[in-house]
Image 1 (spheres, rainbow, N blue to C red):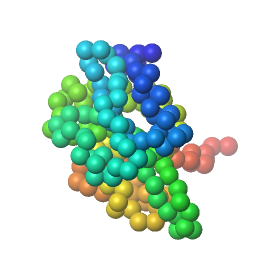
Image 2: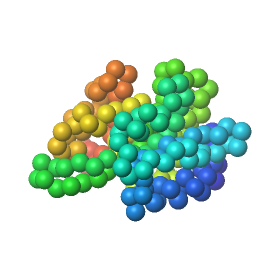
Image 3: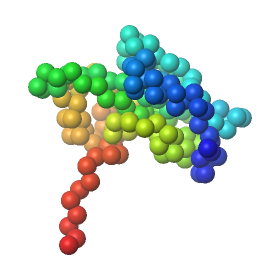
Length: 165
């Protein structure tokens, strides 16, 4: 189904590969690209489970927008092995304005197609190797810049308590 705001559809392979990453851990990351002529989001690159975060960042173009999901493994302060799947909207300053607008207007509907994403949404690149220990400490980073021009935000954190009766 096409996104009403941008007219972009999501290719079935995007959903299928994401489900494989989520359920079977078949991939470490997936990079998605909008094909403007076809008016749809397609899979551009699949990262093998053994690939590193550096391999992931190297697969993102320096001057073009992309969407990506990354399966991040970490150990909590209680020494529990955990994993979270993050959605990344890559929009470098050097990309074309038209591309930035298309990716921005398609982002929310594309994310809805990918069920089960963690709450961290990043416009740009954030380096999880900078976080030591508990991933939940990332909430402390909200609104601060880990890297120049990169500000993480938490789209799905718990709703704040209502002050109305």
